[in-house]
Amino acid sequence: MAENSKLTNKRVVSGMRPTGKLHLGNYVGALANWVKLQETHECFFFIADWHALTTDYADPSKIGVNTVDVALDWLAAGLDPERCTMFVQSHVPQHAELHLLFSMITPLGWLERVPTYKEQQQNLATKDLSTYGFLGYPVLQSADILIYKAGFVPVGEDQVAHVELTREIARRFNHLYPGKRGAILPEPQPLLTPTPKLPGTDGRKMSKSYDNYILLSDPEPVIRQKLKTMVTDPARVRRTDPGNPDLCPVGDLHKIFSDKQTLEKVYAGCRSAGIGCIECKGWAADNLIKTIAPMQERRRKYEENPKLALQIIEAGDAKARASAESTMKEVREAMGLSQNLELPQRATGKTGE
Ligand code: TRP
Ligand code: SF4
Image 1 (cartoon, protein in one colour):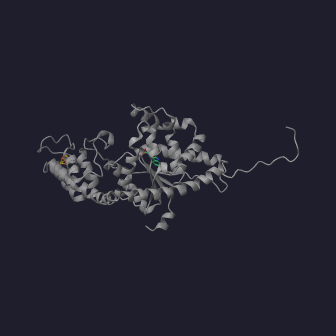
Image 2 (cartoon, rainbow, N blue to C red):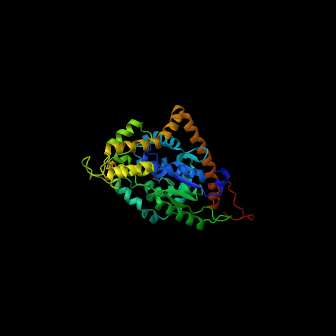
Image 3 (tube, rainbow, N blue to C red):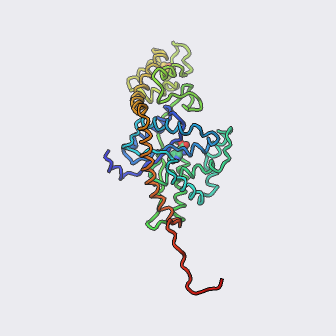
């Protein structure tokens, strides 16, 4: 789509934490959608390294490498620096400034009510998350979004409450500080990413913490090996037992990655015990590899010339900073924080000290 027709669409902003090399779940759940959105919308995508610190402040040693790994996976998956702006959150310090200003106007009760707050504290009980930064995490996220005046924020179900809070903060800000030329911060909409069920090799949701994942960067033999160990419909104990692809994690993979013909063969063969699971997993691997191979091809280009990826990020940082700074000028002005202080009018008549 032509660049100028994108301008009439609302801007898209989203972020991802630097968790290191991305897996198929990250692709299906977010990245694949971003790759599509860059064709139709002006997009800003960033690696949320400050957000990583809200939970991993005690060991930040991997944030740097993980950030580069995510950037490489984005490029491999098809995010195109000609079509979107990709950058690193901490390289745009304006996010932190807006976060600070928002923290002045955000009632504590709003933050304590965000469902992820108590949930995450319980889920990550080994970490001490009773910090100021962790409570304020959704305020930082609001700053990430509003600083670009986003129209849409593609997120998963778990993040919708954060976009809702973003809308509330925008509303409160606009109410307290009406700009001279109208409201400064538009309220963004969440764009709920349709996420097909993507199980890991053990049948649970694919996740880094379960060690059940397939990386976008896994070599072909590794992918085939991982699929071989994948759990199947528990009803198919023997080769002669019929199974049901709707109750099988391998079936779920077929539904996402395989063509219609393969899918028909899988359903018919599985239900009649006409095929074995080994054969079925081989087809799943073939189709997965068809999706992943072009990514790995693109990744090689960047691995051979690692500076290229860093240059892309630097260029994205600069674009993001320019856009963020332009919003901040309006915000500072509206909040009475002028860079050009005026001297107070002095009374002319002499008054006693
Ligand atoms: N909180 C998001 C997550 O954990 C990441 C994120 C940070 C984000 N800032 C954002 C997503 C702004 C969308 C918009 O997945
Ligand atoms: Fe699963 Fe395929 Fe085996 Fe059926 S044949 S149980 S879909 S792996």
